[in-house]
Length: 431
Image 1 (cartoon, helix red, strand yellow):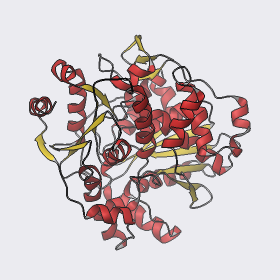
Image 2: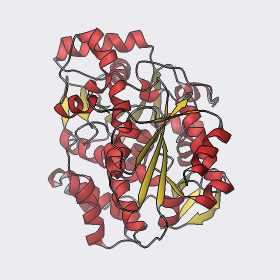
Image 3: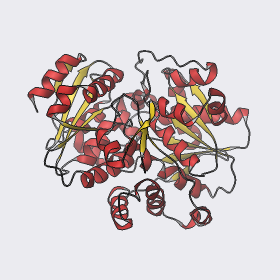
Image 4: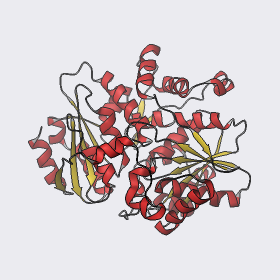
């Protein structure tokens, strides 16, 4: 299968180039030349398939021309070895917990799959692969855990100073080995811009064999489609009136859901739930896409003012009108998020994190407009990763042992400004 640039469909590369280069030279994003509908037999037997079975069948659509069935099975078995269970709140709203992996965040699915895929793609390389990644919270921890100790791979993580939770920061600054953390004096958008500029800089690329683990990399989106199928299966759904509500920042998770829909999963609508960084919901309402500087909120992983994957969403639809048939946008302020955390705890005895709370609000609002439709809210991270937000609202919540141990470790990071010349200078001096 070939992969084309969203800015130039005639620019096409193979899987290896798309994954390891991450970005096309024209600064577009790679997309698969086709997204095939999965077989009738797959859907007929979906209720009997494990998450690993689903992951294998979906992966084959994208990897079968480059890897044998046995190799794909190995990638899946090594990466996707934790569940994505559904928890029912009421007759119409369910939660799908995506935080049962090593870093307690949904990005473990993409990071672990990518690490196993990349390790195979670079096994014959003499030069080390350097993974350059920006994080607004959970990506960094998932990538650090997924790539820790992977032979032939170094990881450099950029995160915004003071804008990730203390536990999230410890997850990406305490591992050592092949993981390096850079504390950028700026926003997530600044971190993401530095990563993109590095990929387009001649001097950097001369010194480094670069790739990215952000959702700009197509290899992140493939595994994130797995749990949409698994959630649909767990619901026992037999019709097309199931919606997915996705707390959204860079919109990779929602784009992966669109891939699942293109593969034939009968999802009715996607609810794009954001905080006040509502560039995409505004576009869905007005047809005008206007990126702006991000604003810091209590749901920090969604503090993105220029979501990269919007360009992939655009590529999947040839008009705003067609996109709005499948996607509805919602946004909420911090006070509403806090109230939702309290409400879910009080009414359902369930502790939801700030991002899931934004999703819950969107699902609740949607179901007032369309009563009776089932909606699955993606719960993207364990609530204990956000203690400065959660504890003032609910009192002290339980913390998993792995996070307790992590809090005792020493942070090791390098502070840098958001200026590209300074970042480039540090990068080249460490080549």
